[in-house]
Image 1: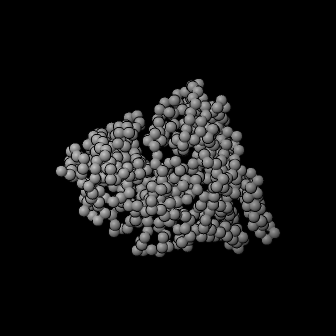
Image 2: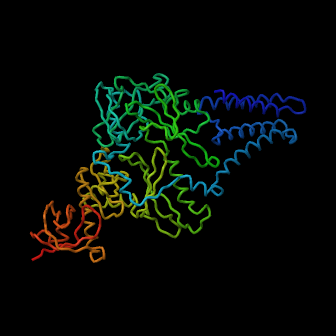
Image 3: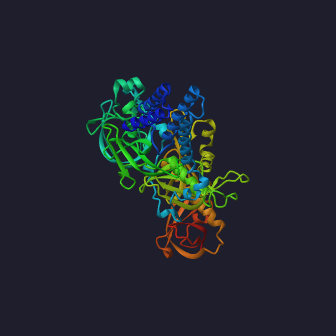
Length: 575
């Protein structure tokens, strides 16, 4: 509060001093100066405090103040010489603001902006991205989560409304009590959940209640698990500092009043390992004027007590998922790809850009933003549907890794899933629609996963997998297990087809072997041979009909790879 009083007093004093002309005090001028200073104080007190020299708002207030003063002075006395002090104050404040703003223009800072995102290039993603079990894959989005919890809102008797959902990975065990009195022991092991606070429905509801009594919790991997939580481990919840609060209870104003010198952004509810709600806030710092920002740390706000703790990136608690805001990360990716050879690059040489869509992916190693990277489109080039690689950016530290690997983007993957014969009719009739595609590692395959959702009840009806390297490998099913089985079968068939096409290449091996084990699963046959140890080979009957025959000795052909599961390119029984 003292900062805003001091700022207003400084403006008033300057305004009053320039109102003294030739030892004669202009009373109307000083009155207007006082009113303008009080108005600025009121704006910063009743609304989000704007005075901060880290943003254009503080400078803009000074410019507006002196603009008002000069306009009034000109109306009162159109003598340019008498109004010169006010005009100088107005011009100086404006020049300072424009100068700081212009200092961040990319034409001057392109080379430094390009290096803000520190990117490590990797070749083998298998070593760095761990697979996610089916039971931990996210099969619903925030809209589905909201519709599920809406079924329980009747228990609140219109007392509260649902706030914004945030997705997080949660580990912990705790007992929750719902509004209907049900008590449940919940256990999460690196499980993806959606969390949303209960918010006030307006000013009068805030004035009457002053706090809300809990939050909504939805398991993103199992839509049958959704709760309206009123108490955790027997402790009743009283969420006071919220987006729907007013005056001192407005979360953004509460943080700004305690930390007026910081740039705070990306507010959102997350649960700690004990199920208690906190608002996690990102601390940003300006680089090169106002336009470029970097992440410096986090603020953790206890939404019940208002206590705020400041952390560096390294010290941020492990349970916090999102520290780096998505919009800041996207801007840094843009700089990295756009200014590879500086601001002036008319030939577009080596320029890269993010493919459509950016999502958060979870695995046992943590939480990252995923985005495909493609060559920069030019006016003469057509819209690109392929990628030259993809990037994973740690949502806590901002560390980025680029994997150079050709493939398809999310748009192409979704189109391939929609075109599958098993689902195309339902899509055409409008009985399902496809949610956003999310990247996963599935049995060593780079994969896009998406859910087909019914528009009637917003619940998942089918699941789809599409390979991130080719749109020819797709699997659709009514359950995750069916979809994955169809996907792996499609991958095996594709792999065998491509192996057959290149069977005469120099890396193809042919040898006579003895069959030690043969297993049939549908139309797929798996083999082990005495001469190849534990290595497993496979082939599909429609591609190599000879595998259906019984034989002890055979001549096989296969490509010289290190895959544990190897497709056969040829199979001939020895007579």
